[in-house]
Image 1 (tube, rainbow, N blue to C red):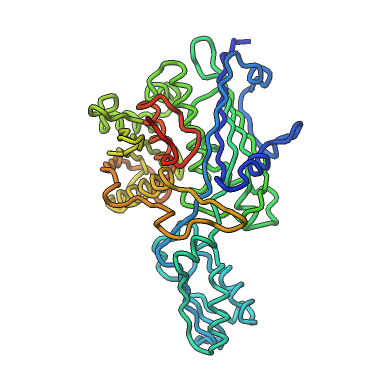
Image 2 (image 1 turned 45 degrees about the horizontal axis):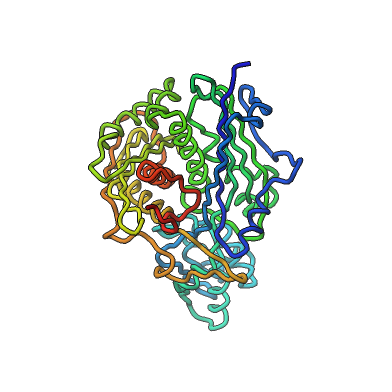
Length: 441
């Protein structure tokens, strides 16, 4: 058997709440418990990975955060003015469910409810929920007149559903030449799909979406998932499980490269030699970002992702300011999303995804005390401000290939890219988010 030099990395996505140790215990696999589902290619040497020569246990904490949208509202007319003499409503991202709950609230049949699909604006998963519909219907029914219900920011933040926490454990096996022979990931956490569809017997898609497209060439790969509910309602947030999966993958790749004394870009390229589309994106971003040539006092971190039928890489340029605060000066983004119809829309989506993901990485933190969410508005649930927004350079690779997705792929890589840059600057691996909770000097 080829000798294996072992690296064990544990990447954890967790909620930062009162009673954190309870949540840790909830997400910890019980002794002797087997994984709920998984897939394996090649042969993973369990005994060798358990008896590593130099195990390096690591913890990353990935917090509960929520989707904040500008204007959570619902317009309802009861009795309706449509053909059915029932109820008419405007809003939501999930019309069939909206029709069902509106009918229940009004005491009508679903075919007596008209749902009018509107321009969504920014939904990002929050408008998949329909918790704001019944109150509007009941109010309109009580007064016998049209009602437009708009939640306050405080109502929205304190009564949202949360991105699922997850424990993501990575183990990697290397030979004596530093070649990656085996890579394993075991995820433990709740399932959004199971909440939306309790009849679904395999509710894994909302947990392992990205890692199913693990891009790197490793002869032995093992993925396992154990479902563990934690007592909080979980819901969709822009990019869903791509964000924690990408954080786990790209953080582990950077750490393996650092352990071997390898350039993190070169290490990734070595694992993608048979994928010309992927290597082209990485070589282009190295050129556009000036990889390895950051201005004095600034440091670079890189992350790569394949998903939504697109390939994307980001390089974050970071400095550590007085007081130990990380400042992101520039983000370079290169994407191959196939052929594009309107390049400016692609650029806008990726710019917004980077800002969205960077806000979560820097400040995203929902805390719960005695069953009540503590954050209430943008004063204590921070998002990126204009003066804090880095320069963003987006380059779209010319392509005649099939169009890929752009709406969510910009979100996941920014957290590992920034954290990898922080490691380059300080030698510190961040094991928890938000980044603002850490003193980096």
